Length: 416
Ligand SMILES: Nc1ncnc2c1ncn2[C@@H]1O[C@H](COP(=O)(O)OP(=O)(O)OP(=O)(O)O)[C@@H](O)[C@H]1O
Ligand SMILES: [Mg+2]
Image (cartoon, rainbow, N blue to C red; front, side):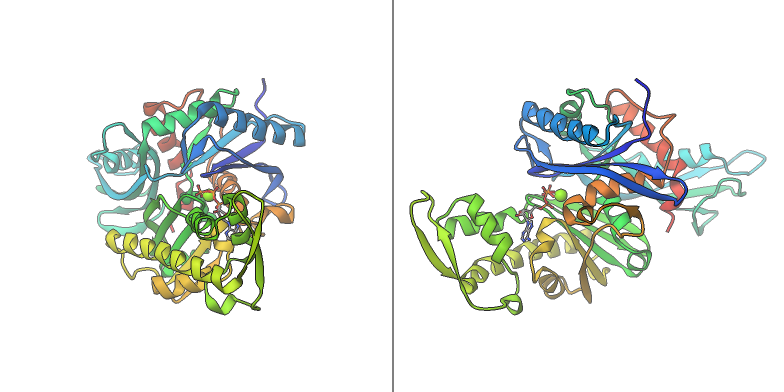
């Protein structure tokens, strides 16, 4: 079947799958979102496949539905992965140019990156993403594209994300079973950070937090580049559990109460009023005050931000971030940005979604639910054409090399 020009981004969340399909509009140089959907998926827990049959069925339903919506097949599929099995590192690579002519080539750049990748990786882990953070030539730093320049010593800084091959392969299998081919996998926070943070925010030092259901992804940008990232295996679903346990009600109802009446900071408790809670067996109701809901939520939110604070402190980049950007479902709760300012010691924190000037899309897509899926297609449109790179199987060796090649072609957006 001929490959279409439709690019889809699939965000694998902890309890749902979200995807958008897009096409590049070369006249306006923007990305046009044609369709998108988000569906519950109980086959994935914390970014890891726990039931391959259910996950495949959900992928088929989601992507098949989008294809029907637009009347075309998806030509290119990009997948955003998350989970506590992912780990990120910054590393440095060098390459000596010993030829008579000292003109730096693409191959020299690739070899410098290969050298940066030569680091111990845990057994059964593989590289998910390699991002070049800038080159230096003969100790002169801050060179975005050294190709064609002269030099003897080429150095590169990279950000590498690794993940469990087992988990990555299981996810790939679940997506391939209904007949979809994965063109690339990304660590979801990477495209999200690139799309949601402004260049100024990245430059002065910023923290991005994707506050999901079962995962909080944290990224630190310092001097324009992503220096640290980590997935913490807890999130906003803990608040649902607290409410369910303490209010003696179902998780579904507890989640509704959280999303409708939940606030994370006292100043957001607009008016005192009562909320009716249905008992676990559904037979009776009792009333509680909104401030009681705050009393349950606030300590948990504070604890979650304290976890983030500990994670950042352990990264070695404590106090490097000046501003913060919150995304993900949890960011929607009033008072979350205030808690982030207080606990993380940031000067200011805002909620972030993909900026409207980067994509043409109906209003509903500028919502935290779609941020990662949207940023996947956006990130990729800035990078490469696909004709030379498509794989039928997500296999260890091929994925690493393929991504490196693709990445180097699109290196210039990362140089900062
Ligand atoms: N208005 C709201 N107020 C409070 N919490 C909310 C609100 N909207 C969504 N949430 C919560 O956000 C969480 C889901 O967030 P998100 O959609 O980012 O998660 P996900 O992508 O499925 O999972 P993850 O990022 O953990 O892999 C759920 O706990 C949900 O109840
Ligand atoms: Mg998410």
